[in-house]
Structure formats: C-alpha cells, structure tokens
Figure 1 (tube, rainbow, N blue to C red):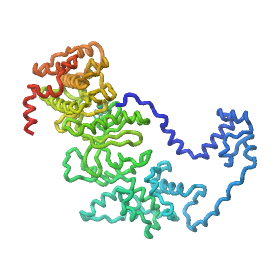
Figure 2: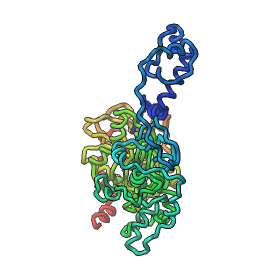
Figure 3: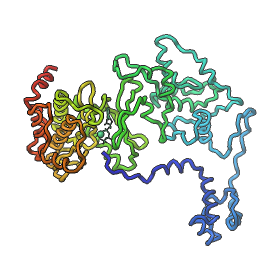
Figure 4: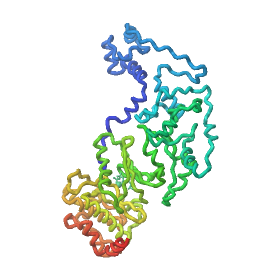
Amino acid sequence: MLRTKTPGPRGGSKSRRRFTPPATKAQAQMAAAAAGSSPSGELSQKLEHVTLFPLFADRPFASPKPFGELLEEPRPAPAPAPAPAPAPPQQAAPVDADVPMEDRDACILSQDFFCTPDYLTPDAPQMASSFDADKENILCPQSPEKSVARSKRYKRDSSPKGRTTDLLEADSQEITPVRFSLSQDDPEEEKMAQPSSQKRGSYVPHSARVLRSQVTPPPCIKNPYNMDPRIDDNVFCVRKCKSSGSSPSIGADGLSRYRTDFHEIEQIGCGNFSVVFKVLRRIEGCLYAVKRSIKQLHNDMDRRQALKEVHTLVALGNHENIVGYFTSWFETEKLFIQMELCDRSLSVNGDKPLEFGDALELLYQICKGLDFIHGRGVAHLDVKPDNIYVRNGIYKLGDFSCATLIDRSLAIEEGDSRYMPPEMLNEKHEHLDKVDIFSLGAAVYELIRGTPLPVSGHQFASLREGKISLLPGHPMQFQSLIKSMMDPDPVRRPSAKEILGHPIFEKLRNASAKK
Ligand SMILES: Nc1ncnc2c1ncn2[C@@H]1O[C@H](COP(=O)(O)OP(=O)(O)OP(=O)(O)O)[C@@H](O)[C@H]1O
Ligand SMILES: [Mg+2]
C-alpha cells in the first residue's frame, strides 16, 4: 500500500518539451530575454553584446537592437541546400522541405490516418522499426479517393470459417482491412507488409497500415466453453465493439497493453490507492478484475512499494479463499494487476447485518485463507470487510498491499486502524499472524452488529481492552470465540489453525472434507 507518494520530478514536463518545436521555443525565449522580462533578458541588456542564444543565431528572427545588430555579425555561410527533387506533377499538397523524411511520414500517419496531432505518434522502438523510409515512397494522390468506400464494399465471408477473420477485421473500420499483428518477426506479417503494385495507389501509406494493425485491439472473442452468466453477450457484437472497444490502443507512452488485451466493462471498486475495473480479456472471452494504481509511480521506491502486493500474491500461489492472481505490468507509470473477478466485497454500510450461519461460514473460510498464508510465513495486516470478497458464495481474502513476512524481515505497514490490535498501535510486532486474527474477529463483530467500528475514542479503547458487547441471537460459544480472537494479548489469541479445529465448525469441516 502506498502510504506516501511524492510526485516525481518528471510529471508532464517531458511531454510538454516534446510538443514544443525547438525553434519556436527559442524564439519565445529570445523575445522574452530581449524584452528584459526574464532574468536572462535583464542579463542580456546589461551585457548588451553577448548573445545568450548562439545556437539559434542563424535563424531569422526580428529582434530589437542590440540583438538585431548581433545577428548581423558575419557568420559562416550555411551549407548549400540540396537541389530540390522535381516535384511530381500531381502532388496533392506541398511538402515542407525543412521537415526530415521521418517527420513527414509521421505527419502522414497522424493526420491522414489517425486524424490526431503528431504527438500521438508512438515512438517506441518496436514501432520505429516498422517504419522503413524506403517503403514509404507512395505518393499522396491528387484527390484522396476515399477508400472508405472500398472498406464498405469489402465482401464478408459468410462461411463459418470466415467468421473469425470477419470479426478481426470488423474493428478496423477504415480504409483497408487490417489484421492484428501477433509478432514483429512473423514472416506472414512481413509478407503482408510488402508493398505490392495493387497497393501503390492506396491513400494510406504502407507503414500506417502496419502500425494500425499493431495498435488496433482485436475484438472480443466469445469463448464457447465459458458459460459465465456475468458476461453480457453484447460485447461480442461487432457494432458494439466498434463503439466501445476498438479505439487504437495508444496511450501517452505508446501502445497500451491494457487497451489491447482487455475490454473495460465498468469500474467495480475504488480504494485509497487503486481503482478496480471489471474487464473482459479479448482473446479469451473471460472476465477478470484489473486493479490500477491511482497515482503515477514515478520513482523506483514507489514502484517497489506497489509491487509488494504482486510479489506476495505470486509467492503465495493459489488457494480457494485467496483472490486469484494472473499477471501484472506497468503502463503510463501505473501498476496494473489482473486478478480473479469476484462478485463484490463485504461492507458494513451496504449489507444488512450478517446472520449467524453466514458469519460462521465467513469466519471458517477466511480462517482457511489465513491458515494458508500464515503457513507460508505471510501476514496480511489489513483484514477488514472491504478486503474480503465473495464469489459464488465463497469468501476470499484480497488486497495484499500491506502484506509482509511474519519473521519481520520485511518492512511493516499498518492497515486500517479500526481493525488494528492494541500491540500494533504500540508498535509491538512480535506476533504478526495474530494481528490478522484480531482484525478478522473485529471484522466479523462489525458485520454482525451492522454498525461501523469506532475510529477513536472511548469505544475504540474498550474494544482493545477485550470489552465487546453481547451479540444477541448468536450462540455463546460463537461469541466467546470472537472475544478470544480479540484478546488484548496476542499470545492468548487462537491461531487460524486452532480456530479451524473449534467444535463450532464441525459441520463445515465435514462438508468440506466430502468435497
Ligand atoms: N478481484 C476483485 N473482484 C471484485 N472486486 C474487487 C476485486 N479487487 C478489488 N475489488 C473492489 O475494489 C475495491 C478496492 O480494491 P483494493 O482494496 O484492492 O484497493 P486499495 O486501493 O488497495 O484499497 P484500500 O483502500 O483498502 O487500501 C475493493 O474494496 C473491492 O470492492
Ligand atoms: Mg482495500
């Protein structure tokens, strides 16, 4: 859990620099300096004959004296410009000779193809390698014959075999059908990438088509084995995909893995540090939860801190009562974690008070999860209703962002203070597994009573002295178990294993043994 996050020095300045053409910026600086409106301007006025911008002195610039005089000083003659190539007779638009070839290509890409400003053109190395200036000698036709028409006339294969291709191409909604690139080294891709004579008249440059095929996410494909009733079949509908999931997957920093791999359905949760989305993994046709950090993780420390959750989940492996982990990655300096999608998390505000049967089930199942993680030397340290999820009636422990090693060899972070035992408040960390037992007892106590636990004050202190109110309608055996879990002395609290062996769980034990 990222308790403190200091904004990094980079922020958006990188992109701002990138968007500002150097000459314009220099001119603006010179103007400010000449006007004496900046410290450098005042300095230049004092020095009078010293230019602060020797690098840009050969650019035409109307500046008042004494800068103007300085600019007239003899300078080495500029290298003669290469003779301009004879313009093709039917050139559609004049090309700026000052713009390098690569930039011109980028312009074609961004304006003709993406209809976006140039700064969206991704500059990742893998993208750059797809641009071959030699393959780009396709002239812009005089009047762009909208090949959209061709796209409309594109004949769909109505055979079942042709359906997949159809779907793949349905999302591209532009000029020429494109296919999603699986690999840069794919020989098939290379073959497709060869400019052919048929394509010579195409309005879209070859590299743009290749790029487009790389950044257009595939549509959502239905998995015939997956009968998950939570999936809305509309996401597989071509038209819907066009509007909801086929925008080019380019983020500020290049290709978006999130947009390419997942179709976002809705936001399902928001914590202090993360926002969680219900998503469909496009090629699998299965639902997942993706948790994304809210703030950008600018420095290494922030990233390591956020990765604690991933490292814990990977180290733990699978358990029925632990939320399933799949993969994670960084994108736009945020951490994305792909997890098993649960139906909801518990909450004392949204839910009606927990009944005895449900409370017993919850206690038993989360104790199984705790027994599993404690057995692997891990303490959760943030057990609370918000971090307990339910899926098909199975309770699962989630949000491992505070987790640490019980042997105290890793840093210890405190979870939510409402569920924290007295020893944690006094910074005594000898029995970290028992911290989880207190928190679980407090969470169940809260859910049964149906009122939020106190954050501070007299009641807060009483709970940490072992003074808990009676829970009407619940057997005394159960109430004393909860009381023992919230014992002020961690040593006297039962372990997760001991709780699982309690006689009150006999039926549940037998039922799970039969499975
Ligand atoms: N796998 C999941 N399936 C369903 N909902 C989830 C899942 N993971 C998280 N959520 C929802 O998103 C909310 C926030 O997630 P999470 O607790 O992991 O974020 P956080 O920022 O670490 O929270 P906190 O404020 O507790 O530190 C959860 O309370 C839950 O409602
Ligand atoms: Mg949480």
